[in-house]
Image (cartoon, rainbow, N blue to C red; front, top):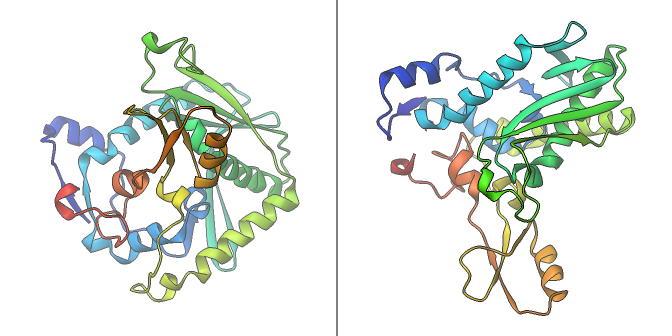
Length: 281
């Protein structure tokens, strides 16, 4: 992997950024829960093209902020909390690795630091992630009856309070849907099969289609007149069209750029579908 410093970060900041980062090639037969619920393409590209991947130190700034928050939670945990406990389970030769932030009573807790509107786009992913953690606890005879997420908003502004559904403080907790064990089990096995069945798993050069629009961060933005800010954003064109049909004004529907591909995907420097050039990394 190659590293750049496009924003001229000082050495003291780079030391902080890289202090907790393990710069080593992941193993193909080990899947973290976060990788398990994602599309296989970014991860397998990341592994197979390890020596060609280009990343910038600035990519890790928010990760360091998240580590600091998680460390605080772990430091201040109650005596009844089991924090950062890693579990490994083997399914069809693949090692599934999961580590929920906290478990107490019959509750699993995950800590997230994100933008104010992050939950709108991430609740589905968080629900899948947390149900996988619950499955691991169930496999060890531990009961889980509640899934909670503590959400900390890093871009919250006092001046925006009172506007639409803006949160009153830079924090909230969200309760997620808990699936039954059968649904959790089916989902995990299906995801493992999905990763193993992807052509690129055995043939690194064979990738003929990108991740889904949702996974790529593509949204359908609804604009009114000449407004530069969308009135509403939907995940699919059908959802956007349905909303527009219910309004009395005429709206313009536009497809957004693949935000995740271009800004956040760790394989974007070499993925043929990201639309990112090396100099942009």
